[in-house]
Image 1 (cartoon, helix red, strand yellow):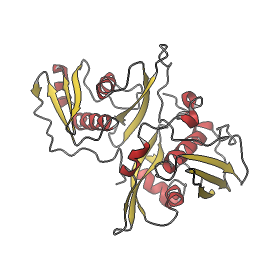
Image 2 (tube, helix red, strand yellow; image 1 turned 180 degrees about the vertical axis):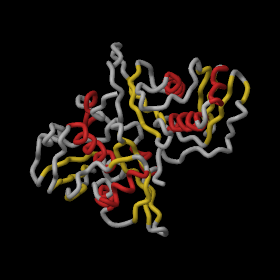
Image 3 (cartoon, one colour; image 1 turned 90 degrees about the vertical axis):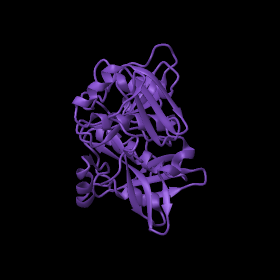
Image 4 (cartoon, one colour; image 1 turned 90 degrees about the horizontal axis):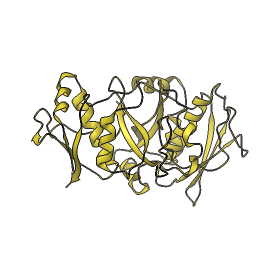
Length: 312
């Protein structure tokens, strides 16, 4: 699937599109621990397949933590090696310098200097998305205005629009036409990559009101790209899905049991369900049923992911 990250579809929505995470929930990915001297924050990197993915990293506590967080996105021997272990790429060209100022209106002013332009639009756009979403993880930042060499700039050299302040972007928008009903609604789904080493957020537009049940139906439908794993066996249908008392409960048809024949897919499916549920409310576990009976190979004792992805 050819992606120009998210700008093909989102250039119209661009700065006004917020990620599916609510602003009030930022503290879940941005936690301060003074005693350990570390802060957990979410950084955004690119994959070799062109996806942008969030990864939690413990960042040393310091004043100007937003600027420090961006330092991990800059290409260089150490950063590139650390990202490569996860199958990721840094997104800011080596040697780029930057200053960051955060206003009382929660707009971050980021100036790039000594910037070596990319030779293609996709990498340039990926850089902007990763920068903006990384900074918008911080509670003090709602939007980011990027300038180049201290001057307001309408676009970066390969055409990426930076003329106005940008809010968090929807990630990895699937190609294809929006529903023609005029009621397009955005869902964030999580599919593992083919090696199941990363959970990839995918933005899908549907003509139904987003809900946990709708999200699971869309997961069962599968990913729209051969780069991502379909966790659910062919023929599986969703019978019910709901969240109660912090537990996400799903019930599938008999075909789901074929998942036992694919090593690692049950764990991947469980994580996808858990992450989908957390888009709607905080959950602590997943219960899986198959046509009325609890699915015995699945156990709630297996830990669910705390973060979408986490640096190893």
